[in-house]
Image 1 (tube, rainbow, N blue to C red):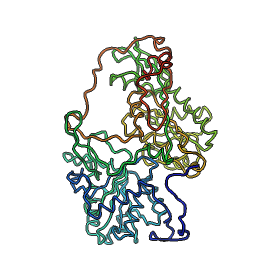
Image 2 (cartoon, rainbow, N blue to C red):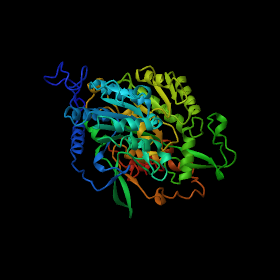
Image 3 (spheres, one colour):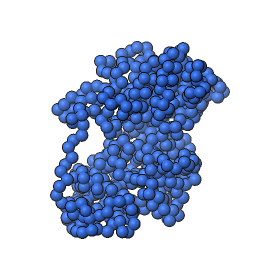
Image 4 (cartoon, one colour):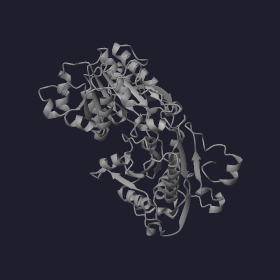
Length: 537
């Protein structure tokens, strides 16, 4: 059966060799095709070859030749690719050191493990140890900083990096879209401001991201911005220097495809917006109306205010629509099915808040499942994440802990039960389930067995699902036109009787394949007969 697209085994003549990476390093890794392209790109930039868009400016105001932006999804090998790039250029005498900036301390361990695999010494920067000695600790090749730590020690770090004897160093920004840049309000983008100052003396700045866009319409560091004409106006577009689409990784067998199951249904509301208590409670009393009700179809609602209200109710286990309950039970059945061929497989539930997560955990435990609940207020959250990665639980229920930087190749089912509907957060959450490990790669043919995403049939989420495997451009629009006007929220929701959709509102909308088809156009004759009123119309 096919193996992943890069070879992790020893190459002929390489057994036992130590190479340029130092003792204990694995110098036998053959880069994937895109990683080889990255190495060549970094080399050209250091040689001073002008990039294709040399006339454009960067988000931080520095020359375009100093910045390289890589857009590649989970499982592409961004961490290893960046370190391989440094290692090759160090062997050629072009670079001496590197500094990794990352947004979470939990991700630091992944960088240390990858560096150790290549024999690179990556040390965390400690203010008290580096005083008077420069930033490089104990002869290390690289330093590891969090964005928060960099901002907290900005003056000391800036002085040391600027005065360092080794001027040829590489700045690596992990998940660089977090480093927003706003010239009008620099205090609001402190991480981006700190990185720009600290990396000013770097020979090269490498930005890595799986989601190269932001919800606030701002640019970010280490990213070129080019002018493009879109919808009748000139806007700025973030232009990655190298883009690796998920569909390419799926075709190569490096990651799993995703299949989506969107749970449709009717959502009942009180007329004039007052019928239901909209608190966080999911008990039986929480679904009791205070007057006449109006009914809105989850997948077909186009008015933004109604769409948002529908989703808030749909994710509640105790809502009268039973959308969340049916979704969760379907996800649980799917995980049981996946385990027949992948016994170690696990599931992830993205919950809205801690109270919501506890109710979900309780329901799963009542069904006999082992559950780990993690949230930012739990001091043992990191230990629970590690335990889940090691196979100690069937389900991981998370509140804003598993969007980025969490890797668990055993994840095969994701249930998305939160009101956060930005494309960035949705894609980050669902792609936790695309990773492969070596043991499974040896057992599965290409394309790999799919992972599954269960979510309410919210129109925005379904739109994101259609394009998750494609790289869409991030356009930065003038502030006056940053957000389109919302449709009017007035009027009543459709009051069609339930039989008008022939039970279609209770259907699960299925979407398959790495390039997702448009499930909102030209339904089949069977769908027209059996699912009138569903999202396939």
